[in-house]
Length: 246
Image (cartoon, rainbow, N blue to C red; front, side):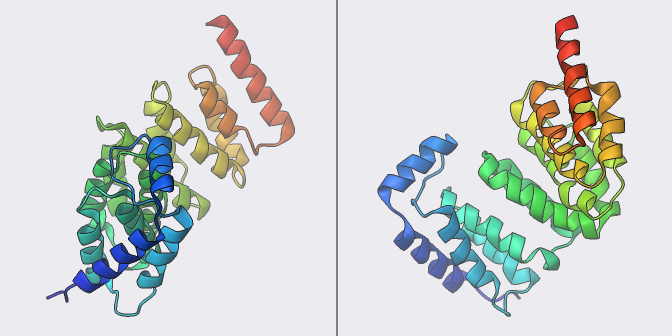
């Protein structure tokens, strides 16, 4: 049986409340356009508080998951941001068996400020270590009705691609979503292409060039940012020409 995590929850919540201010709480709520309740603790302070607990030796897999679930329950932004930081810090203890929990957290996030860390660093960390069981999950997410889940299926490839994983799984999902109108999906495709292009420019160019007329402006602007100058200029010009023809 997993020992009670109530003392850790109480410690974290008290520290977050002490670090918050009403002014910052209102500012953050407006910025994120979120329906969650805000304590007003800064992102840096929230992360510091969460990581201090996550570094403790007794926080094994079961206690990490139990702590995450207990903290996540109430709809308080800083509590949920602390969960993201804890799971990022303890991702080495997580496995593909934890993907159903992470899917639930992603569905309940409702803001990029929670989704992106969970998707890129936590799900991405699992996908790096266990690509075979993670791939069908991410493929299913790519056609989900929830655009945050679709975004997550893309961002979860950032760490695997950086580590040299095959480009094709991401490419197949991105191709399905390339003509989407949702900004957060368009941006995610560009973000992954941008980061991959730093080390694997030929693959990014080879995939993007024949699809340039289907891609959105935000996708192209992100994707070409770190490509060689000649390739960046050629792809940008091709995109502009495709817009004139449409």
